[in-house]
Image (tube, rainbow, N blue to C red):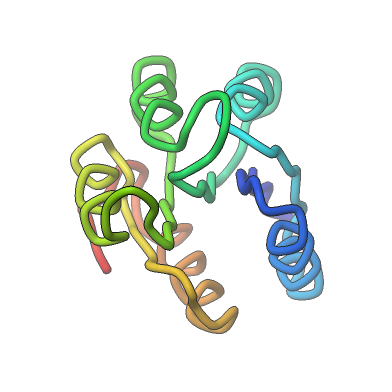
Length: 130
């Protein structure tokens, strides 16, 4: 069973994504922000990380930059609905920081599932894709 770390500060969305991913057979560990996510990554080897960008404490961009230093081969999907700037801008920076795939919010779970499958099939730290 593939292990996925899900970083999302919106508890309702995090729960919805977790439930959907567990139903299709993934083992999900949740974190409300990048600070908690980094602690978990130091303890558990995840097959994939799914991270929001705009979060309290340590945001998704800082999380990606820091994780890349300690785990350059980590598979990362960044997702964002925007904030102070448009989602596309956050996701562009996330790709430059090391996210192999990006997904703008809102999205359908089927699109997320397909992207997760693609990310897990490709070699770690693959090229950026939308």
